[in-house]
Image 1 (spheres, rainbow, N blue to C red):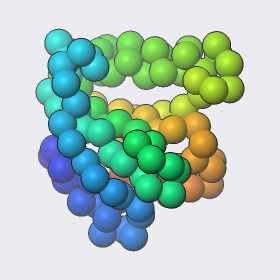
Image 2: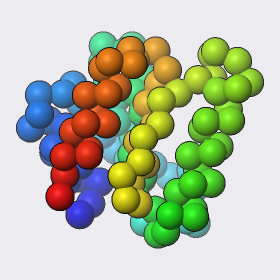
Image 3: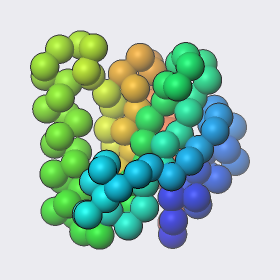
Image 4: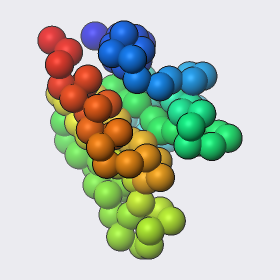
Length: 111
């Protein structure tokens, strides 16, 4: 399974997905297999999140911890995170909890 498969699942489930593009290597490039930027137009211009496929759970846990700890620095830095297997989804904190849950549930339904 790839990040493209997860993004297709989001779309198939009727979730908002604008443009997507590859992330450059500075965003966990040495620990991940793939990284995609996902734009969510309803959140604003250039807003959305990231979807990563990591090589292993240890590297994923470090990246998840980075985003979770960043949120402790203040509300402006808060973001949602969800993992399934070696996939990590990170979305802008301006997304409602209920809307983010729809993306998390979509990921969780992948086999």
